[in-house]
Image (cartoon, rainbow, N blue to C red):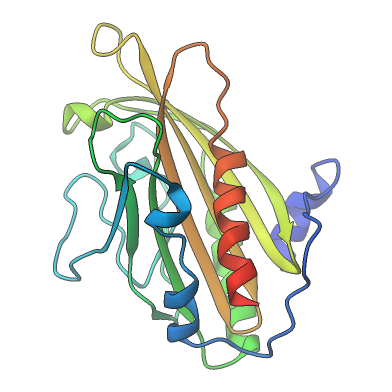
Length: 236
């Protein structure tokens, strides 16, 4: 575990882990990751998957292909001296952003999942990159408000994070609840989970977003962990 994430672990009682095969490959390639990504068949009926257009830039919350998101939408928030919403490690080659989403936008059974990975020339370079990501996560405020921009991103954001270890991969899961301004949507909130895991020369990223009825349990972190386990079983 990196130094920054070890500090987070010390502040939390225990580090989450999952029983299963322990990863053993000495290194990974982009093709390894592409073949392992969570896909529409994993998500089940009503899902589709596709690769993001590399030339497409979201104006709401742009995350460069070579970056990892750490503080969703914080750059648009009212936070004084807001940190960056992403960390862009040096030397990481992006695999490409792969999405899984519901075929029908009104189908709440299928979450929106975005994945990417950064492949490094060596494990040592990847270790340093993961330290950068941990420092970026530590700079995120626990709560902030976005009061400017498209209606879909307005409202309050509340986030927590905890260390995560799965099959020998180490990192964290960050969970963010996004509630809308009063009167805009009093029925639903966005339940977001970001999993970032590291092993050998690879940093893996998975963002899962779903709509939940206000008052319901936020379970995006559990679902994101389950999706990530499918990926890691295939990666080996």
